[in-house]
Length: 274
Image (cartoon, rainbow, N blue to C red; front, side, top):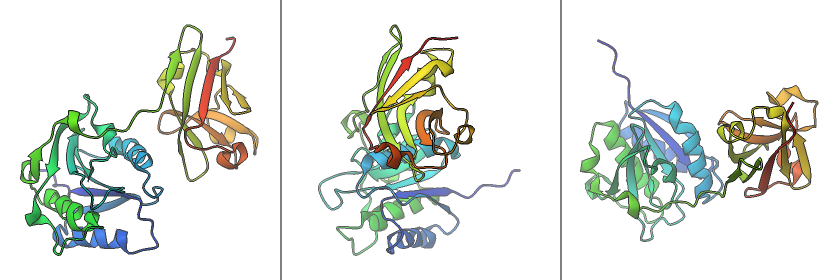
């Protein structure tokens, strides 16, 4: 018989690393479920940036095995009248506030079920009004790692009633060969990820060298195959590891050079092929 793999719990937070918040949250789970493997996904989500937290989770989740437990703590409404959720999707479980951070996993093709967390017998006491990640979500994640079923955590929630983030606008005009999207993420290197997927570009033209990409006053023609295939300091466009169109600068920082921000418009136009 094959060896049983220990449960995995990932953590995505806006806690940063200068305070004790990450370590304490992990300490609670280590005490309650010592067999669990704790993986730090990201703790540098911009403070209270729910959209960035959702993006990071969406990008990472497909690379984890089924039954992974993902703990998402970006919770500007902590202590207020908001629900905490356990969402099963993709064969995995996602724990977090009902504030939109779990939006990527509420799509019909991924979603399986959702529970409004209400299991005070699992919570730490005394219960803090400002640290539900430590006092509620960490013990709940540990309970799941110890084999508890979702039904033990609370009452079933209707997907239609859960808060969802609005999708960034994406307009595709294949007849005239245009796509209008936007910057949705800026990574540690200053690379700009857009909401334009490689499949969107493939539907526009079979010749990626003919594509023209526009951001503010910058125009890039054609897609590079990798960051290092153009001279240092040059702006380039390519398909990044997440499968989306990126703008980057070889051995440089695109966000600084382009003066870019999240939500900046990005346009793609089909040029003359061949």
